[in-house]
Length: 135
Image 1 (cartoon, rainbow, N blue to C red):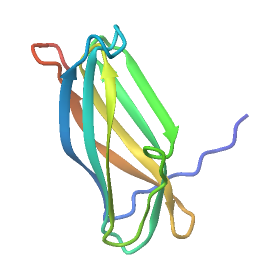
Image 2: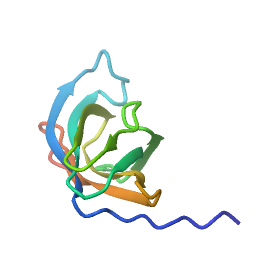
Image 3: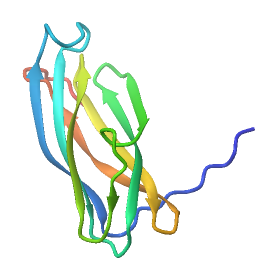
Image 4: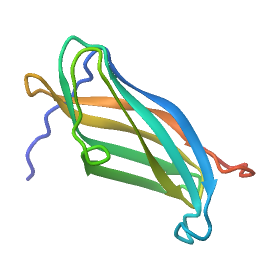
C-alpha cells in the first residue's frame, strides 16, 4: 500500500490569474489530431506574508467528447520560482487539442517552513471558434 499524501493548503494571498488566452489553428505544424493551439499567459502572485516555492503543476482538461486528460509535471516552464511577499511570476505556455475543453488545475510547492501548498489555477474554457459543443 502507498504512503498517505500530505494535505496541501493554499496560503492566503497566493493566487493565479489568467492574463491572456490566444487561439491559433495550426493544421500543418500541430499533430493532426490536435490542430487547435491555445496559448495561455498566467501569473502566480504572492501577496502572503511568507515565501513560497512552486515545484510542479497539474492540469485537468474536461473535453467536449467526454474524455478527461490529466497533465502533471515537475517545475513550471523549466523553473521552480521562489516568490517572496509582493513578488509574482508570469509565463506563457500552451495546450494542443482536437476538441474544446474546460481547463482547471493547480500549482504545487512548499512554503518557507516546508509545508506543502497547492495554488488553484482558475478554470477557463478552450473554445474552438465555430464549435457549439463546449463544456
